[in-house]
Image 1 (cartoon, rainbow, N blue to C red):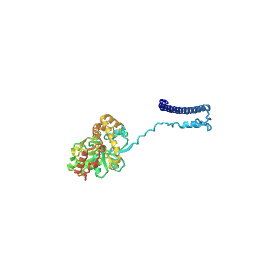
Image 2: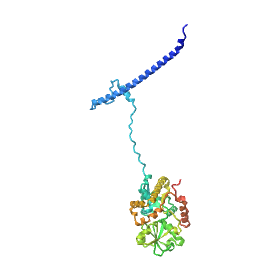
Image 3: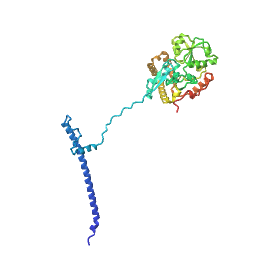
Length: 397
């Protein structure tokens, strides 16, 4: 009987043979793939070398183009396929520079010739604070002080520099105006009288020749000043002095002038030999009010809000810089506006600087509410206008 042990080992031997055969096939396949890759690489290298040799052999360029092949050459298809297998080449170029967005134009008409009271606007413009916020601001001067708010109401300009009393009067007249910022916190208006000893109070104004330059002086401030003394505005001889208060006081021998320049005008009159006494409005019953404000057209406010917010931010920065560097601020004003560099303006610069609004956007609703109520009680306005129709705070959340 045959020995069964060899038979028992047969499956193990067969398995080993199968593994060896599979391994051999795998190794052969790998070697074939490697051989093909090496042949392909050699073919590409040979083609490149052939092209280089051809270029050297034919410097006049009459030989076939590098990379071209002869249709009869059986290796041509192999070379073309190898070139086609190469990845595409990408040439990277630097990106085009990004142009900054265009500046937003804003035209602001001043209420008067450029002066220290306009310092925030002038500093912001000439220090580049406006351009940094994407604004291109044009400042213009009116030919007549009554023009700015009228042009604004007609949509001819973007903003006007004005005064709080005039705003109350013109809103009551139906003009679509609204305060959006403050340049000077305290009153700049006052009554200057010849200091010849004949007048001590508004009670002595009846029959006097009094000059004025702006609408609210005639319609609101002088009547409010006279009413407690039982004097009607018709009892004064009024003279429209426009921009020439000093000349009119000297040449026309006016008894006084209601001015918006109560800080600088006494010195200017003194330089011309006229001594004047200032009667401040607040000391004679007229509520404190803002001396210089920025006014917008209410009907156009929605589309301007973002630009106006940036404008007010720039004005706040300009005022802060002026307060920190008063001498440098004056030197800058004198440089950019030589016409305001006068002894009178320089003498009043410290007082004016302290009146500039450090927070131009902030709204004191009480100031507007009390002044509106006062004018209504005096019979100077027929109806009361709510504060939110007179002024807005663009910085409020």
